[in-house]
Image (cartoon, rainbow, N blue to C red; front, side):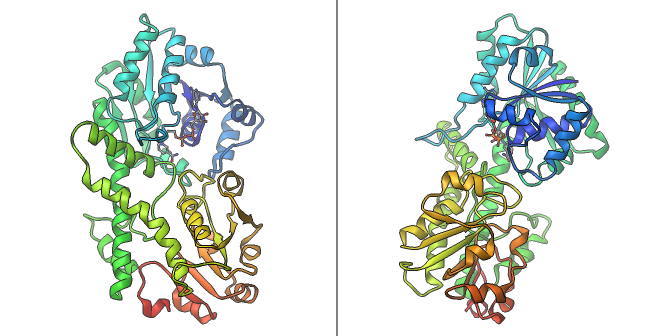
Length: 441
Ligand SMILES: NC(=O)c1ccc[n+]([C@@H]2O[C@H](COP(=O)([O-])OP(=O)(O)OC[C@H]3O[C@@H](n4cnc5c(N)ncnc54)[C@H](O)[C@@H]3O)[C@@H](O)[C@H]2O)c1
């Protein structure tokens, strides 16, 4: 099949490369000329494990290409995926659909035969209907069908997720479009992922419901962690105790500094707005968002409390390890580290930062921090080490070395990656999330 992928970001580039790897012919189009120039010269603009090799191999075999010529890409394609961004709209939290609509209009102009146009971007219920309407306005003679096919991949494990999805959701009532899109995913049949055929609105809502449910799990275990600290219980054991129940499941039950990233914050907000617009307030998700927002500053207070300093970190140097919203990505969008660092600075701290791959992105969004070259350079002279993102390389730090170079021995482990006993054996004051105080102090 000939596929045009509009938007070569985290989703478009991974999906495009994976479709090419299945044997399809894919061209990825992006309005960002620098991104396309980089891709054409063999550079991958994002950090995603395995992506560079996958792209190189498929470009080499002539199945994957990059460009900015919408006319030839769309004109030659049987299927066009729209995978552009849908960030929060400034001011009101609705999904900003301007990129999706702009892409749809551009695509409509270039259609020359029956084409299936797929919204892969995460879009609110009814968006695909609107995409269809404005494409008809733009090109009344065009023959096309609009399908909703939301993407569920996770950054950091995106290729595996794309090739071994838990499910594929295809939203369309058009039989011709359904058979085309089924053909696009046919190479996956060996892995036998469940394919859910729904109408478009159901597909659109499924994506938001999935992300909001996962965000709810995270917010839930974080509140249980706060209670565990107060009552002398261990949230990790509670999470295991409930996660082994198949009805609950063990994923997304890790207590930490609150969810962030490129999807959960904007998608929960957008679903809340859809609920309000339809006079169906989604109180649970509203609470999840509010609880999660407050958590970032609460984590800064946790750092201050580790010194018994009552909210004052004046004169203290704090080393932050990991700033991307999760490991194995360079994505800084809505990373919990950003409000956490601001709160530390508000309390008077001087902040030092190290992240294994996120530094170039971090430099664009973090102000008044000292960027360091590795974990030890970051810790040097610091009064506390705060682990914010659980990169593998932070799991076995040389604690003796750390203790010898730091100004005071405090570790605030917001991901619970260390055993408190081990850290304390090395002379540190340890503070985790949701662990009994007897272990932490
Ligand atoms: N990042 C994820 O983990 C993830 C997972 C599932 C779903 N999604 C959804 O997928 C969509 C894309 O997310 P992303 O993270 O890949 O975003 P991204 O910002 O990384 O990529 C979007 C790309 O689209 C390009 N673009 C914008 N308008 C364009 C146009 N008119 N023509 C061509 N290119 C255009 C941008 O230049 C950018 O490179 C969003 O709706 C997001 O919610 C993201």
